Length: 474
Ligand SMILES: NC(=O)c1ccc[n+]([C@@H]2O[C@H](COP(=O)([O-])OP(=O)(O)OC[C@H]3O[C@@H](n4cnc5c(N)ncnc54)[C@H](O)[C@@H]3O)[C@@H](O)[C@H]2O)c1
Image 1: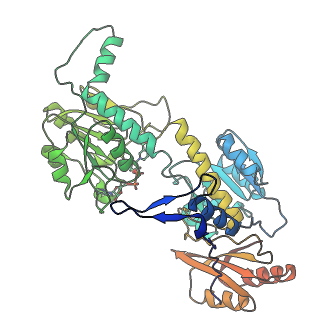
Image 2: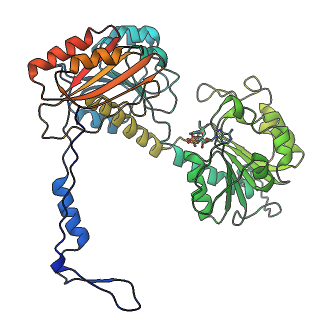
């Protein structure tokens, strides 16, 4: 298998047009007449002519690709799909399991939010389905394991709302330090209560960020622009943004910070990450903010810390148990301590709205629709939650007889030998394979393949013992 061709753009420089002069005490100085293009311009022009355009691939099968979009997925996503030539059926409601079972067999892709359940029974009925897009953060509405075993990657959009959460935290920091919610509620109830005791500017205060990932790092930048000092604690070493500083222990952070904000995932080791022992380490009069996951904070311990005055306030957006629908009560039946928590002064409670903004919804639409399109047209599974992540660089436009093989198969020994035997009469330009649990995925670009050969290659790979699904793109 020859190594892939490499194109090095030629960028000849006409040295006659450029003179470099160096005065005794200064750095080199480049002089150029006003009409002469700069080195940068000429390099760009030469590079652009050398860039090879990627070839737009399409499935070899004649079938027009049909997409089913449920739960009122954004019109931007509909447009993105129709502009690719896909046929789109768009519905505003979720479908029941029975409805899905009766209709899903006509579709190659489905886009859902959190209410549509893709169960094992639905997957059994979905004999043409190639890919599932969850236009939301979570994916537990989909039977991920069975989807992978049927050769169906599932995509979501885990980080599109990071900025929205970071901005909400900034609002909470200021609202807590000015006791904004209590003052606003009193005035709405008709009570004038102008207070400055215990109210502070945030400038010069220390923000302690626990978990410096997508949200924590965005927040770090925002907080510094408000004049806050930022320290963070993370289980991995991360390059700090701006003047932020990573601390080596959680206790160190708790002892230094005026505001502690949590941005870790829910894992066995982060459940009750902040409990009585950690709260006792926090500065007297500091604040705790949790927009991560409800079980990361032990709420009875938090209630005691606010009552004792250790904490001057708290903001919570997430809870161990959350109501399933809008309008449902947030009471002691749901969480035994709910009434006590609701009665505390300077404690802001919000209904898991951290990522709920129009911008985040739009980003989710863009991100998931482009992931589905990249899979359908190019076979890329980068970002899939249940599948090996595989991608190949693009086929160039002029490589007309090149095809892409996308082969999902059971993860067992001997498969690559079988497939490579089938491909051995051709020139394999590039190939990549990876596995995740029971499923493996191979992508290979094959040169100089005739129309007749395409059918032959597909039939032969389809007949291999480990084959789950084989698609050819050309
Ligand atoms: N309130 C909301 O609406 C909302 C919206 C989006 C995300 N979230 C939640 O916010 C949290 C963070 O999201 P993200 O996108 O920034 O995640 P991320 O994966 O980008 O970052 C998480 C960071 O936490 C670190 N971490 C893991 N375990 C840790 C531990 N024990 N101690 C310290 N650091 C640890 C990781 O190394 C990582 O850097 C997640 O729990 C997510 O579910 C909430």
